Length: 74
Image (cartoon, rainbow, N blue to C red):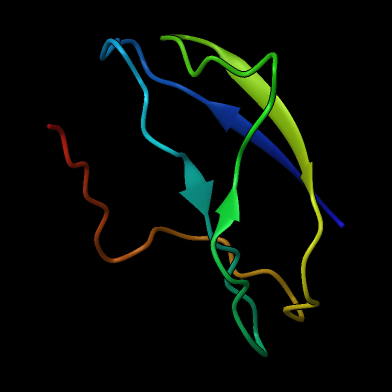
């Protein structure tokens, strides 16, 4: 079980109707896509949402910046 906290920035993109997911990278493996779904999480600007996600053990969690992140808008 991983406890995740997502903090959004100060720009709002309305509406956020696409699925939001993350992956956890570790010293031994990586999780599959973990979709962040909650009745209370709106991902509004300047907000913090907490999630508990269950997945495989990745070893020691790697903290850092992924090489590339992308956003796609319709």
